[in-house]
Structure formats: structure tokens, C-alpha cells
Image (cartoon, rainbow, N blue to C red; front, top):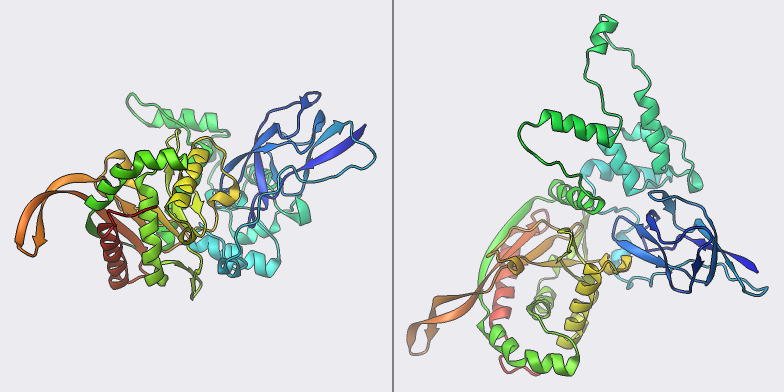
Length: 446
């Protein structure tokens, strides 16, 4: 018999810790090789973690909702292995493609407000102390300045401040009365009491909101989305340009090949891979669109990694990334798009599937919208929204003169970071994308 340590796996290049959402096994339960042991959440994605060995659960070292650093032993499994025992992570996510984006990693932490940027860069470079996004979120929401954050003793690896540490600090602070000019104790007693739990806070909120209402607590992913959206608006001055495209050739070509395509390739072809195929060609003509801003330096990405916004059954949104999309043909793009979308809806995305995007496409037309004004997915500088395809009578210019015909029309909208992308560049890129859509080869062989 041997005891094997199972550790929190490294789930991506920049991910240092994960939150345990749910244990699928308890002490004494048998577990098979590759059977799901637990579910974890990072600031990027939720994942299921399979067991690297078969045996019986001997010990579980952390509870649900605990935040655990990467590489920490989380459970022990009793196996029938021989003398040689390999102690390895449960999951080792494949490394992300090597890109120039790695150069910006040390000084840059995405999805944070300008105030947070100063906090993190000072902390990482000066004090050499890492603060997780979760800890920083709590500090920001509680109004804890960086000077106080530095004083909190950490119980994590290398003295790192954990969720428990900062919550204990907050609880201790609430029990300490700061000397203020209060005439009498009576006046202090009459002040509104602060709810001590989410349940009490919800009850207090219900009392303050009149009428027949229902209060729903935001889930973890929705809170993350909300924060990222607010951070993006605080970080980038958004400008949105609009264009219209005649995608009749695309519609006719897809209708003509979709049955044969699915029969031959074993996957459906949607409009998304067609859009991405066109976008990658245009990005090569406008490389500044495929960039990010770090301090006062513009980082132009040589790799074209297209993120595609995907709606989940829960109503939340996630953006899986097609890495090196310009190297894939229509078959490769279709298979990748469908695979990522299915994995997203079934909660099977790996952390690396959502990292290192350089440009994002969102299809607001999926739900019937004609157009949208999307929010930039930081640290990118632009995001393209495509609206619903509608048949409309339009003027068609021909050698014999103008005529009116029924065409498949679609609106495009590009939101871009005005710090880097001026109106001329943004509008020129968007117009080029629309023209690329319009000149789709109706006789294209895939």
C-alpha cells in the first residue's frame, strides 16, 4: 500500500491559486483513474479535476470554498502501487503558445482598475509579495488601502495573504472602535448597524426596497463578469464605429455546402468560422488592432488569437480563444469553434482555453439584435460585434445602372480603445472587414 499526495494543479501560466467549489468524493470513497475528484474555480474558468491515480481517498485537506495555492497538497489517496510512487499534480494544463505577449506579463495584470494597477505593480515589483485577484477584490470592496494590505500577516505560501487572512483582518477591524468625535454613547448606539452576514444584508436590503420584489444573489461568475466590465470601462476610453455589410454571398455559399460539409467533416459549419477567417486576413493589414497597452508602450501581437464570446446556459458569458486562428482553414476553424462552444456550455473548458486572446468577436445577432456596442475584453484594444442577418431591399450598382434587389444585410460594430486606436484606424479596419465579408467567394472549395 502507498499513500500518494494529490496537489492543486497549475491551471495556467498566470494562475497562482484556485477556489475549491465542490468535492465529488469523501474520505473512504474509492476513486478510479481519471475520475472527477473535485471542481475548482480560478479567475479565468471553472474546471473539473480528475484523479491521477486509482485507489481510496485517505484524507481531504481542504474544505469547499477554500482558496488553495497551486502546488499545495489537497488530498491523499491510498493505492496498491509498488515501492515507486510518483507524486505529481492531478492535472497539468498544456502550456500556452509562446507569443510575444509573455513579455508583458511581469508588469501587467489584466482586468484591473487604474488604482489597482498601481497597487499590484508596486506590490509585485517592490515588495515582491503576490496578491490574488480574490484578495484584491475583497480589499477594494472593503476600502482597504494598499498600505494596510501590506501590514496583514499572510499564512499562505511565502507569506502570501489568503482569503482567510484578509477576512480575519476585516472582522478584527469591525470589532475595533476608532476614536472619533462622538458626544455620547447614546448617539453611537443609534447609528445603523452593519449586517454581519450575507443573509442579514439581504434581509436589510429587502426592508429598504419597497414593493413586491425578488432579490437574487449574483453567482461567482456573474460577479467576475461585472467586475471585468467595470474595469474595462475604467481602463479604456471606448469609441464605437458602425458599418453595414452585404453578406449574401456568405449565406448562399453556406446554404450550398452545409450538408456536404457536415457529412464529410463530421461537424457543422456556422457563420462564425467564416467571420473569423475574414477577420484574421484584415488584422494582418491593420496590426495595431491586434495589440495591447502596457504603461506607455504599445505591444503589437504577432500571433492572432481570436476570442469568441459564448453564452452559457446559466445566462453568463465566457470567451474561449482560438489560438493562431490565421493558421487554420475553414475546416479547422469550424471544428475549433464547435469544440470550444460545446466545452464552454458543458463546463469542460481548460484555463488555457480562455487565455492570451488578442481580439474578440461577439455575435449579438444570435439573439436577434441588429447591432451592439460591446465592451472591450481587456487587455485587448478592440472587439467586433456582428448583428443579425436580415433580408432587405437595397440599391445594387451594376454596369447597366442601379437596381433594387433583395439582399442579406448585416450591421457590424467595432468598439476600440481610443488611447491607441484613433477613429480613422478603427473605421478603416471595420470597413475593410465589411468588404472582406462582401467579397466572399461563392464558388469557394473548402
